[in-house]
Length: 463
Image (cartoon, rainbow, N blue to C red):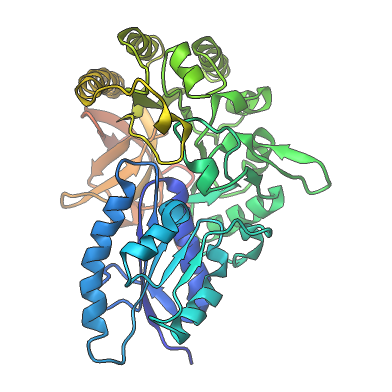
């Protein structure tokens, strides 16, 4: 009988990392590792890092400082061990520096290598403190082909990675250097994993990829499936009620995908479509391979196919050389299109990227003033959209308990959190029809107006 070991995984950053962390747990489960919520007393700690945000590496070192205390406490009696590992994009980009600065780290591995965790753990257990492991290669074999075929239960909403890597080489981005070239999983691998998730109680799946709509997976009978074709196949799965995908690149929105938004009721009317800037000059400097007119044209085609479609986006403010006019072009694009959610950041250089060496870096006070103006406009649009939901009826997937007694929280088709009171616990995992009665800046409130939509049998409920 295997001995149960405690595994603590901290996930930073993107949704792909959330998926990767879950699969790391799946890989380690046969070795007896079970997830826990605290690093104290854990037999293994994995920090699954992200290199997108500012000062990403320094945040990892700060967390490692806290974990060092737990490691010393566990190993004080000379018999217990704690394996400390750093995974993900910071590990890929700065693995050697991590090892140099933090001697108590036992393992460093990149996002393309975690399928090899069992052999890394075996090696680490044999040689804690003597043979430190660093694996940041891009292996010839595809990691998805070597992951466990069975997936663990995730919840009523789940992530499913279908594509990884990027060939776009935006000048501000480290993803091509940390995740590698674009790779798409085979269509049936994706469909089979989706069926497993649905069988374990999932009702909504979000397809993930660095450029998810660049998906070109192998079709069952040869050839390739586009994302639009894959969405059609997934929509046929009984019990899968909602489908989303992220993150998209405007250049990879094709007619097949636009038609899927027109034809598939299960495909939610919400799309995250990063534009990054509204200035053609800045977009060219970013190597985005599209201009403002192209982005507007794609949005118009999508909304013509799905008139209820709402958008979110990403914005970078203060990119090198951005002028007042360039920034105003971004503000005008936001006014013209309207985004109900957005992620907006001040530009910060990423080591090794072309933009980090560009001249005309924008002064920090200018970036701060611009980001405040942009975020104020985006917040105004989000609140206006939420207020326009008042009095409307929406189908809401109830996913978790709220902060108040007797309150449940779910997700609208537009990704808004919606809270409702007075429903039994058994309503969790159900899609219910709510009339929206409250609109806050970041959430909605509703009241039940109908019986649950497409009710499932009790065995589908996730404990």
